[in-house]
Image (cartoon, rainbow, N blue to C red; front, side, top):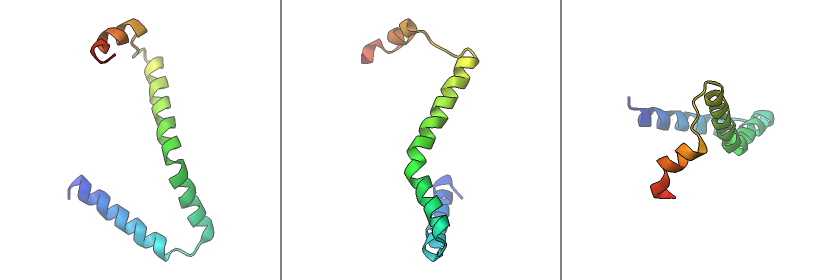
Amino acid sequence: MTMDTYISSQKLDLIHWITELDDVSVLAQVNAIKENAGLYAEMLSIERGLDDLQQGKIVSHTQAKKRYEKWL
């Protein structure tokens, strides 16, 4: 099974489960997850950046400018 097939299967399972769901509190939790998905991804990105900083995986502003000067 490819990753795309697996993801599609999981989505369909969730859609079926949600359409059969009668518990308002669970629906509210699912809706909260949906509305905060972008925020969660942003928080993970910030955490990865902070981990990189603690591990010394940093690039100075000067190095970054030089690396990306053709796009600036």
